Length: 349
Ligand SMILES: [Zn+2]
Image (tube, rainbow, N blue to C red; front, top):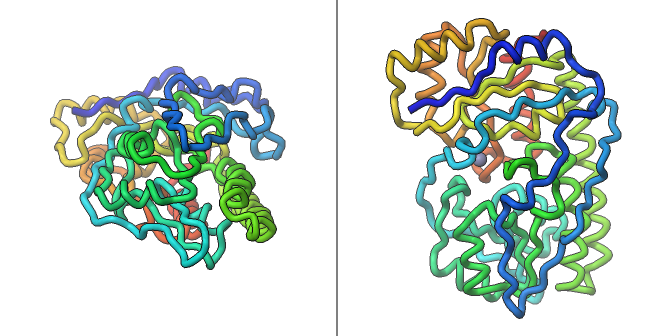
């Protein structure tokens, strides 16, 4: 079944009268929708205070229009979950044992930790994290870890493992980044990911005080790199303010909000299911008035739905990476690949 959430009339009105201020940009946190991490006794929980300033300061953020956050509730669970083997167990001789729950957090933690520490992942290599299961060996390794960097409420299997076999410390990103409406995909806004660098450095410093200075300096370096990436993305999309980004899965809300795009998501879709002709006709009618030439699918999901819709609408398809696993390559490289896909596939208003 396809559920497309396009409110065409209101959408057109917004395109015509775009507010320049950020006053109605959603900034609320969705604490109620994230499951709290269990307070196991040996576990030290940090990250209770939001680190994000209430007002964004860059010109891009100020100019960014409110995102049409559509189809999120259904979209969050829409990825397939290929099975895989366990990842590295996150250990270094003599150094702290550090793990992260899935790729963007692993990437950032590894950059802060440096080459002397191998940061393991609780999501199997190449797998998509939404519905991933943990192997017993991973649960066992978790109990031996000094630190887990995770996003509470995103991966139920990880939350369960933390409950049953807790590491020494859990750094939960959920309270540190402003999740909106329970949407976990904050890492697609590099500035939100950057905010975790310093808390990760502090947690690593608690696990390994001798390395604290190195953690701090590497955290500052990777945060600066992410800020540079943010500027690059903003400049690359500056000509597309208000452009309509159509994805089959609703992972790009934070990205779109950061860079002034409008999102339309075809969500609640089984990637392997073929939409009925009647449904395709309905979708085609709804999208007909929108300035769109590309329907995007995710690199880890089936392109089938996007292809069927694109053929019916005589549009192209494009592939974006939601950066949910390491199959996309290095985080900045994958974000730049997304930028190139968007520059060629979006319609500038
Ligand atoms: Zn996702």
